[in-house]
Image (cartoon, rainbow, N blue to C red; front, side, top):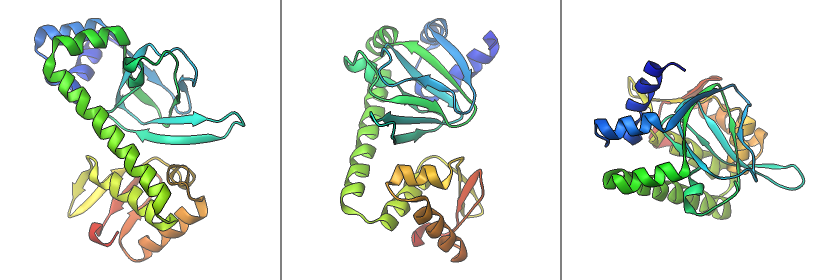
Length: 224
């Protein structure tokens, strides 16, 4: 990626909006911009944990792989989100894998470099803490959903969570960029592909949502 493209991506990444000119120059000098194709592995479970990643375009699947080869999806991240942050908390190896759900662009920074930047810029440190707190809150909500809610409720919670994230709004509709298959939604909600397909079809017939392979349109959020 050429230098001008790298500067544009970094300066339009919300996480770095608190930085002044000199601090942005520091970031540019200490990050690498990379592109990955769909299904490409960014890091494997048990790889050394020494970098943090900032997703600019595309989507990234974070998952755990059990010893029997079964994959458990922890989250699907979109543009503007951070991943690999556990390296900042003393983890020497990755406890999860990161895989491109679609063609994606991200920047990567060494863990020790980001630590220096967080100390240097208190406002950025606060923003990072808020990101982690939000991530932990979402994980807690998901665990509660898995423990106490039925399949239908978990799928509806998935739709509501997606709708409450930054989305496009058009003529009263919430338009969610959504490249996930029904099978991936099922893995995220601990349900089955049949459960997801059946509920999506029902909601579409009731004119609550509409969807295709790329987007979900929430037509009546209050009826989810």
